[in-house]
Image (cartoon, rainbow, N blue to C red; front, side, top):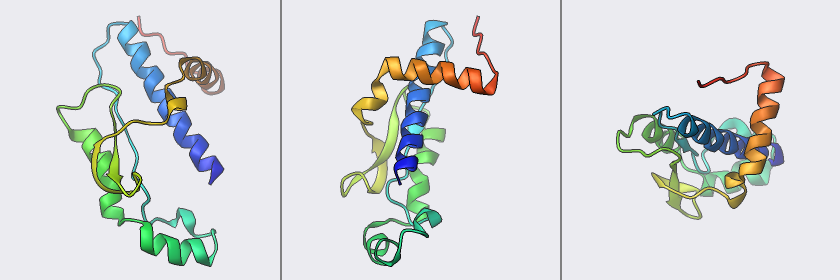
Length: 130
């Protein structure tokens, strides 16, 4: 589970840094992010009976509901850059997508910049926006 949380943080750091990079180069592209909340997927299949059968069946929402934040982020013509969509009910685990605030750490510009540089190095892709 910790790895999943780190990968989600990395996604947000990268998205917010992409938005900053685009804006600083006067490129008008909207960058948005989304999270599905707690959705009944196969991610918990190795979590044991209690988590997989009891907690997930009680708390998780359907895959159909979990796809709505991603669909809204991809199609909402009124979405502003750096907006983050997700459910807002039951501690942001369920419900219809709305604009939500991501974790404080996801707004860390220094960490985002480091991730950007590491990503360029590891992928050997250098983004030259000019």
